[in-house]
Image (cartoon, rainbow, N blue to C red):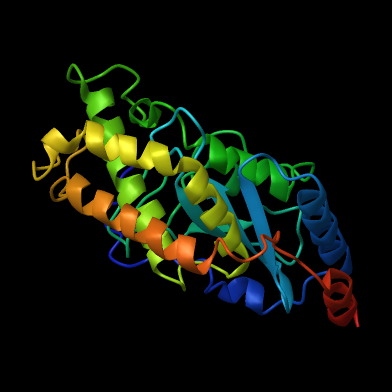
Length: 277
């Protein structure tokens, strides 16, 4: 899924076509229902936070699934629902990109664009009104797969022996570097509601993070050779391990003494009423 010709960030937030229209009452009611369902019964590893003053904008955090190179990573997305939702799909943007430098998947490029047929950015089955924000987020989560190399069209078989394993090592490294360390080091990396989620998951996966670093320390400093081409720099396992230990030390001091609380999402009814009024 080539990014050729994309010289700037693909930004769904500049939805001028949608901004000119007032969301329909039925659309707002459906968005509210989808949000309520997600909050009451969220799919594993998926967390959301609607904008307090505009529920057509939904923030989402997806935790990388077990047994994938994304395991324990924190991937932040923004979804924007159209004025006639659910008859058109939301637009979606990946915000966890290492400042527009990391392609995390053949369908998740460094500009934040998500290549997925149900949001009209790739060929295949299209969006249906029966689908929901939950089913969309599950589809996005499914991109974080055990062998993402093979998700690139034409790469169902390895072009060179060992490419899939090499690509997994790259994605695992970038997940630790960007989707764990950077996400937690930068207090503005995502909405504050997600920070407690990330901290709790960080301690849960900490031993796994450090295991990956120590097991791959012999590759430290070696050039990253992406099977799909492009420049990725060098492996930085020693630096990542130091950052992980520093994060653990800081979070144990500042966060663990506090009583753990789940993110709260309030005033959904008020938001709907104000928009309807």
